[in-house]
Length: 76
Image 1: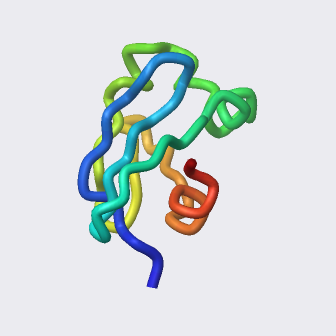
Image 2: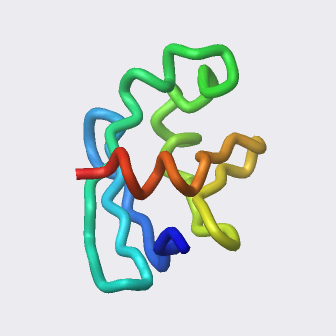
């Protein structure tokens, strides 16, 4: 089972600091994703900063989310 996010902190340059339930803290870079139509609204820094942990992944109030596998395995 993929570790689940427990906390998230938005950082500069469209990165997220995510702490997972296995104790790891990683950085997920969203800078390339926000160029895609589904994530375009996240270019607005205020919207980007509204990210929350939602069940097994992260989500924004406007409905964007991230695949849990992508979130964990592509974070550094």
